[in-house]
Structure formats: C-alpha cells, structure tokens
Length: 292
Ligand code: C2E
Ligand code: MG
Ligand code: MG
Ligand code: MG
Image (cartoon, rainbow, N blue to C red; front, side, top):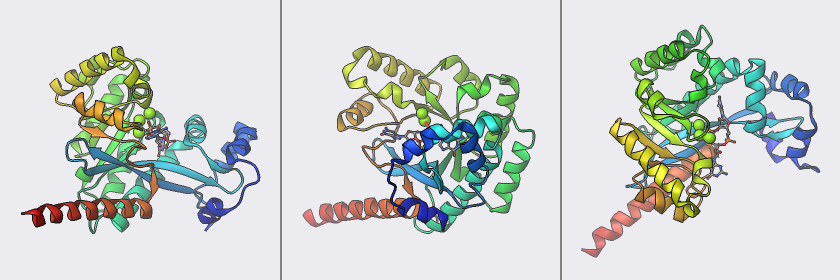
C-alpha cells in the first residue's frame, strides 16, 4: 500500500525539509487526498498507571505518510487540517479507524484497554458532530466506556455554552473526557470545575524542565491536589526520564505517558509491546511464586 511505500522509501533529503519547503496550499491539496490514497495511519501511545505500572489506556495519534512529502508531523498538518476544515472528515476517519484497530488487534487479549482520541474545535462545533459520533458508535457496536476523547480549553473559547453542552452529551453517552494540554495558555481550575471532564493531562511543556525548577513542582503539586479534590484523575504526558517518572510518583500523579515508557506505535507494534509487558509481569509473578 501507499502507506508502506511511504515508510520504506529511501529519502535523499530529510522528510521534514520536504514538508518545510512546501507551501500551505500544496500541503493542504495533498492532505485532501490523503484518506483516498491510504496515506493516514493511527498510532497508539501507551498510558501507564503510576502505581501498578500497567498499561491501562492508549492515545490515538494520527500520522501522515505522504507519498509526496514523506512523513509530515502532526504539528504541521493538524493546523492545516483545522484551518481548511479538512479536520472534520479526517477526524471522523480517525475515530472509525481507532475503533477498527482496537477491535482487530486489542480486543481479544486486552479488552479493557481504553482508547483516547484527540478532538479539534472545528469537529465539536460541527452541527452534525454528535449525530455522526452516535452513528459511528452504533454501527461499530461500540461500548462507549471503552473510549475517551481529549479536548482542550481553547476549544471552548468560541462558545463555552455550546461546548459545554456537547461535552455533557458525550459524557452522558458514557464516553470519558480528558482535558489535554493543561498548564499551557489560560488553563484554569475554575473552568475545569465547570466542564464535565474526568481527567486532566498536564502538558509536556510543563514537565520538561520540572526536575530543575522547584517552583514549577510547587505549582504542579497544587494543581494535582486541587484536581483530586474535584475528583479528577491527573495524567502527565511527555515523561522522558526516570527522574521525571519518580517525581510524578512523588507528586501523586495518577497516570503517565511518555518516551520513557514508549513512543507512539503502529497498532501491530503496540500489540507486541502489550504482550511483552504481560509476559514480563507473568514471569515476575512466577518467579515470586517459585521463591516460596
Ligand atoms: P497532544 O494531543 O498533546 O499529544 C501529545 C504529543 O506529545 C504527541 O505528539 C506525542 O507523540 C508527543 N509525546 C508523547 N510523549 C512524549 C515524550 O516523552 N517526548 C516527546 N518529545 N514527545 C512526546 P504528536 O503525535 O506529534 O502530536 C502532536 C499534536 O497533534 C497532538 O498533541 C494533538 O494536539 C495533535 N494530534 C495528533 N493526532 C491528532 C488527531 O487524530 N486529531 C486531532 N484533532 N489532533 C491530533
Ligand atoms: Mg492528546
Ligand atoms: Mg497532550
Ligand atoms: Mg500537548
């Protein structure tokens, strides 16, 4: 398939440079055809329970293996998809594809793995968003409790009342909601109290230099304590080192995601990662039993 070729082809120039030299319009025109040419792929990054160090969920992250530009970063093509409105169609594809991959690869041995999907403002503000979402869930015979969506506070800026209504409808359907990118921009705990979210995700930019900045640790501790007081679970993203992981444990973070554990992986690789972790755990348990 085009996907595979895109990944295996040898590039003379770095794919980043190819995308950089392209104009927004060129990228947009190719992105418009990306679904048709089978250039999009959903990757999964594991999210770990801090205490048990078990994988309990995964974030679906979109990848574009462009035949023309090589692998284009989401940081480049997601904003283009949002500005052009393509995100509505692409976002729906991501939801369907995430469900398909979960059912094909994870459900047999890992039925409890919960999948989190990112949403853009343009998507939830589309008048048919809830109708389409409900239909997708029905058509795929999905248990809504197996899925969650990551939303951002900036999504609420246009019309907080409408946004709140949409999120509440999603929650009523049984879906979990997580507030992404917390700690960037104007994140405030007062909006959190207003919005029907069950989780907050502390942004990577907030974690990056935290081991060197005691003041940041103090702020994070206050955020975590208040989130817990509001009955919200706290996820830390972008954990890259053992020091950061230990610090998150000490600060009472509930869930952790980051390169320290694993990068976003194609579904089949993610499955291998799950099985490896399971095997390791079974071996450890066996070892413990044998010691007695
Ligand atoms: P996000 O939702 O905040 O996702 C987290 C980003 O941090 C991902 O980047 C992930 O690969 C990266 N990351 C996770 N752990 C680490 C780490 O330890 N170190 C480093 N350096 N990075 C880490 P990615 O996949 O490039 O996605 C970037 C952004 O693009 C996402 O940020 C999200 O806002 C958007 N995005 C990706 N897929 C979708 C999608 O399907 N729909 C929408 N609407 N947005 C998406
Ligand atoms: Mg996210
Ligand atoms: Mg995030
Ligand atoms: Mg982020």
